[in-house]
Image 1 (cartoon, helix red, strand yellow):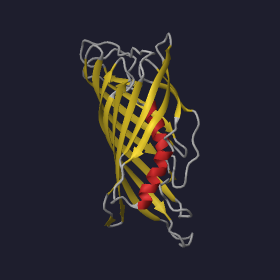
Image 2 (cartoon, rainbow, N blue to C red; image 1 turned 90 degrees about the vertical axis):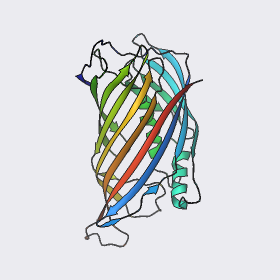
Image 3 (tube, one colour; image 1 turned 180 degrees about the vertical axis):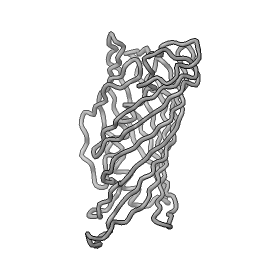
Image 4 (cartoon, rainbow, N blue to C red; image 1 turned 30 degrees about the vertical axis):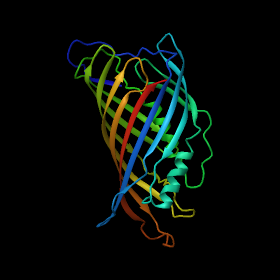
Length: 281
């Protein structure tokens, strides 16, 4: 975490005041759409079925340093499909969502909103067509759920940067987020967030991929996004709206093609929108 601009006075240190007895529910709505381009051919964008996941958060204790320890578990996970959804896509997405339905674990977050730990009690065995990407999405959402604050005193207009290295099953993604404190009151405020992610080459995991299909590889990946967050200093889950676009260059050798041939390359573009909301319970 690095402070870029302390903002206008009056300034103060932003810190959460956690309540160990205050249970919350996190609602995550995820919408995605994807399109591909290969040379001069551009395929129409495919809208994936929307996903809604509800997570119960049960605080255990607040340490002398202000760290909140909590348990979490998914209470429901569902997708919405219709007659226009291709059957292979629907079954692949259903397998992804089924993998998170019984997830549970624990977490620790500091009074500055920085995650020390988010663990999963037992990673489920993945069914046919599932990649585990939705499991990783839940973990990353919990890890980054609280708005993060710098060590220093800040005022309206302050800017700070957070650098992260995200470990997934196949690669380490470098993430840079720049936050701007749009406004702040006694126990609440709002942030604007700009994000960028890059990743090294890695295998492409695709929900609903046919068994025995030729493996694909991501040669390069760049994600950019922006969003807004409304936080309350006594609650873990803020109101967040975030939009991102990921551009991947993918190489793939078709079935039956000689290994000496150059693999086909295409550009995949994925747009994602995520909305987080929290409720006391």
